[in-house]
Length: 257
Image (cartoon, rainbow, N blue to C red; front, side, top):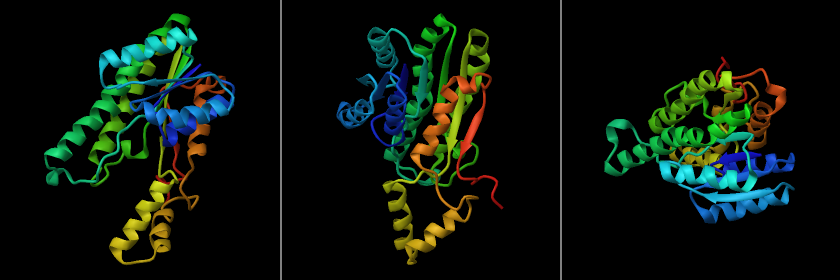
């Protein structure tokens, strides 16, 4: 039984569908109940038993209720995947206005504190059974600062360090905790970003695409399904000896000359 936090759209929705396709019962968690209608239906169509839970994971009472709802429905949790993170505008720290500062705070509440809370309220049910796997989806930007995206780098770094601490704490109790750190994930949104850069610079879209992919050993961004492959691996018994680790899924972005 798998809990996917941040399952309303994008990678989280893909993860829910993939786990369902693999035969797992899946609880999809997101703040918006409306977003869960679409992703929940897709996961359900993949074959597994599905439960949708609308929750604000940055609120301790809401996160605790989410965990209780899942346990009441499924009776146990085998895997917890944390991938929730809010959309924010690109802004340099010195240029942040009140709205941008509020966005930054909210990003920390969800990406950092929210990840802590889901682990706090779900992990004890794993400890009771002496088994379980937690996977935090971080980012290669958790290890490198991104200009204009300090909230993303900082929030994902928090999720990374929470995972490392939990791995040390929960390993003796039979629970593994790891991270998957994606690079650029191909999507309509990423394509729009590349195209907007092309317009800003007055160059062709293909030039911008080539600039970014030239930094990747595979010369292309990864897909959501490729990231999901790594998450499913860490969640499975194939990774029974792995905890406290980070798997980079970035098409070779970090080590490319």
